[in-house]
Length: 189
Image (cartoon, rainbow, N blue to C red; front, side, top):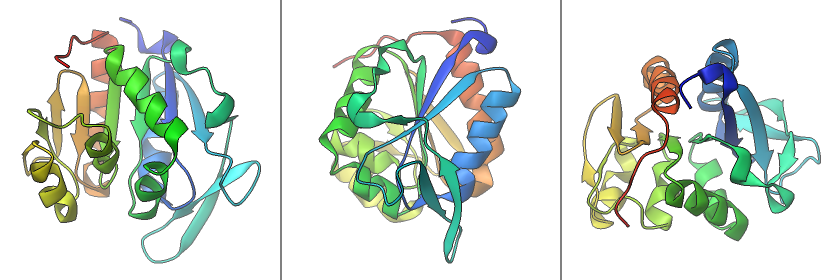
């Protein structure tokens, strides 16, 4: 996939995502020419939107384009997982969300997780032996799962992109575009 303008990007989230961690990558990817789809589990509060968390209170709703339960994820080139404390904690209890994540990993597709979203990578066993960053409060979870935790704005390991927090969003978004343009990544199981 050498051209971002031909890329199809899936953002998977549910109620409680960190507002900027969904909106900024979505905007940057769309500005670069990618087609961006937001998918969420049906367990969300509203049938057509998910609500973000904007630092101290509920934020703006974001339109949902697809339900993960009926989504065919095979046609997407990359998966973006916004953080926030609530969103990834809810998603890791959704079997279909984990199935989608595993399919991207198995296919060598780009997976990008920011803030608390690396919890999902921990949940599916994808951090063992890999360089990873995250929000500092889940460092122990990453290390206990065998990850090599780094305190860096963006860490990439065979197409798995991780980032720490909203302050790193510009670098995170740029790295997603770069990795999508690189194409598929071979990963050890």
